[in-house]
Image (cartoon, rainbow, N blue to C red; front, side):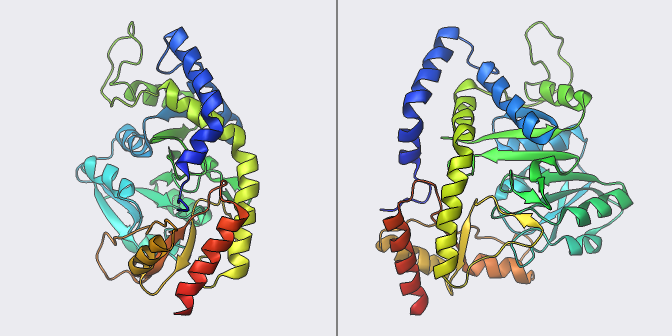
Length: 350
């Protein structure tokens, strides 16, 4: 079976270093917010030029940002109509109302539609670039500046993609990132990060990620979540970041082979430099194609299966019905990539 994420091969790759780091962590007895967490945060800060905080998931990152901005009942947040539930969940959990706009032909939020969703209750835009591309940042920033709205960049899928040469994690008033087994920076379980611009913001969010009391001798100030970063997932991030550049070379090689040999594939917008997060092929019936490819020894994922605002969103419904993600991980061999192409073409020719 050709696995979608190849977690087993990923673990074998990092296993020796990972166990060594875990042993050092156990010996130090610093299991949370220790040296590996600090190293990853510092590396993110060097890449982005911003302040960075690791948290337990991308959803926790978004929940903390919304709480920090005091967005809640009676407020509206404009966001994407299609994608993972982790986009909509933190908004509704905060008590605010999500107001949906469609995706564009590339699968990211259609930023030209933002004015249609604006009301007197709008407090923020959560802009989402799906499939490894950045949304049209200039349109979002202009819109938010004009109407004095908070601009939150959900970069769970677009982290390290580039908008006109600028890293996605540098965009927005706040940026949230998620790490997981299928992300460009994979981990063995969910993890996340927040990027912000001032030390004051960083310190407030730092308190909020530990129930308002990040250190034992500090006074309790406010409230928050149990989103304190642990060392074992920070180690996983570190080891993935160590390999990222070489992985990107391999993922782009495989993607080029796919593009050269397959029809009906998703394309990136001109302004975005793709981070290779997901490779999408469009099928007449993606769920049937998923089942048939599984029978042929290929694991795929139907990203995604819902249009949150209903069926009157043309591009969202196109992706709901037709977009299937095929394996694109750096551990795929040449022969496996060839088999994937042969089997996908076989289905497309039917």
